[in-house]
Length: 350
Image 1 (cartoon, rainbow, N blue to C red):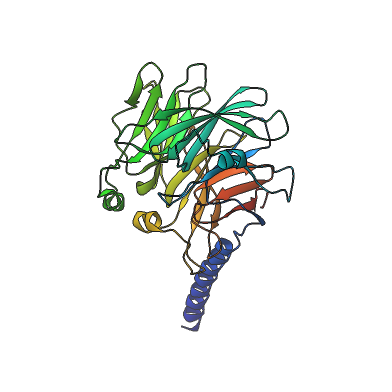
Image 2 (cartoon, rainbow, N blue to C red):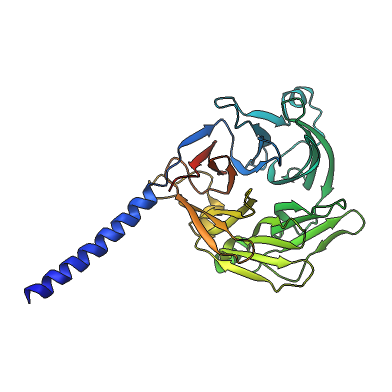
């Protein structure tokens, strides 16, 4: 009898220790440092073949502009650089992007050495995609506005990617229809609210397939241009779609609201998202005060099998609800639209 009680005690004690260790491991996912002075970095992008990182600084206010900022990881302590609208444009009042610039999802194509085209979703006075020419040959990031593409009236765009190659084919995710007043309730129920759209100069806007998604969010494209990877935010899924219909669609079910996607130099995908319900996250403009709130996850995805490798579980009252993660050297940088900083995690941490 005594042995039985001892065995039960040891078993219960082991379970409690395991649970405690799990909580401790989660608590240990703390950033090594913060990069400050970056206003609401909803999306981050490292320019291919360079060290420069572009931040899309979103404005949740329908009457206030956000901005694009550039960060130099090779210059620790250097202040982030405002690259658009920029001081000269603000002083002159000659802003080609209407009167309101609220950047959201961003992506780019490298056009030549030190030259890029930057594609930015803008929720300004109109729903548009703004295209910029980027030049880093001077050692600084110089951004020049090129043109706008109007989005369909039924599209509130979130993520954006451009197909590789000479033909400019732009893919965007429509999170919901702006005329749909019940979209948050539909998020909560996991009901369809949007899908993926494609734009080309000769055909304009067309839907990619008949797949309807609940909160279509982040998007990336394979190097051969044949597969799209799409976050279905409200249903906590990452989808893989074949653009040539040779491979059946597939998805992985995750335990967080899947947000932005970014490639790593290894050819894997980083997926970031919030560990909360859609209505709470969508309605929030500040972090929760509780130390256990604002949780988010970052996982690494094998693009072939969609197998997930958990990297970060973080979030507290100081930083949380991450929306994007990018690999920068030995670190993973996480952005959040609810903060004015980027959290930098040690990538090589065992």
